[in-house]
Length: 339
Image 1 (cartoon, rainbow, N blue to C red):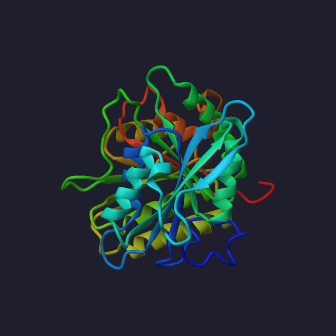
Image 2: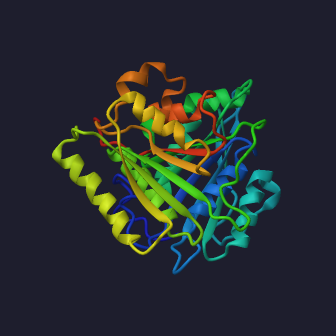
Image 3: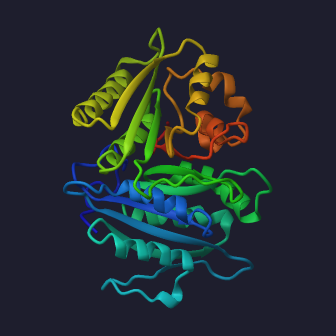
C-alpha cells in the first residue's frame, strides 16, 4: 500500500501529496444509496491519462450496533489479498467490481464496522490514522423529504469526524433518492468540475484535490476565484493562496480544459448572485468548508445555516432553495491543534 512512515503522525492532506504518490481515501457508507455518487467521485480521483498515480480506497461499511454486544471492526481482505465475499455487504461488491475494471489504477480494501452510531466516529478516525489516509469521505444526502433514522444518526457524527479526523475530510453531498441525479462520470461527455475559491486552508485543500482530478483525460475544471476590491488576507495566507493558484495555472498552461476565472465581488448580495448563477453548470462543485477572510458570507449567513457541518457555502449549495441537482464536495483540511 506504499510507505506510510514519517508522515503518519503529521497533518496529512492532499495538498502535501508529492508528485505521483499514492492517494489514500477512506470512504464511509451505511447504505447503498450513496454508492453511485461515491464511485463517480472515485473515478474522477483516478486520472486516466499518462502515468497515472495509484489510488487506494478503504471502504468502511457502517453497521449500527443495538444492545450491549461488543463492537467490532472486520477487515475482509487478508494480508495475502484474498477476500471472503460471503462476509461482505453488497455495497462492498460494487467497489470490488470497480477495482477489477480498473486494475493498476485503484485498489480497494473492504471493512465493516459494527458499533453504535453515536460512537462510530471513533472507528472511522482510528482506521484513518492506522492506514494513513489523506481524505475521509463521508456521504451526506441532500434531503427534499423525510430523513431516515440512520441518516440522522450519522449526520450527528459528522461534527465529531471533523473534529477528530487525523487528515482532511470530504463531505459528499449527493442527490436525494427522489431527485434526478446527474452522473459525475460516464458516457462520452466531459465531466464539468467547479471549484469556488476565496482562500484559506480548506479552499486550498479543495483546489489541490480538484487539480489532481484535472489529470483525468476527460475532465473540465473551472476555478471561480472570488476577489474583493480590498484584500482582507494577511501576508502569509495571501502568499499560500497565490502560490497554489500559480501552480495550478502553470501545470495546466497548455490544458484548455482548466480555467481560473477571477470574479470581483463587492458585497454579500453580489457574491450570492454569482454562486446562484452557476446553477447546474457543473457535475461536481468542490468548496472548502470554511473560507478565508475575503469571503463576505460568514458574518451574514452563518446564523442561518441549516447544516453548519457543511459550512456557509456548502450549506447554501445543498439547501432546498438552491435549484441544483449536482453533487457537492465540502472539504476541510485538518486544522492545526488549537485552531
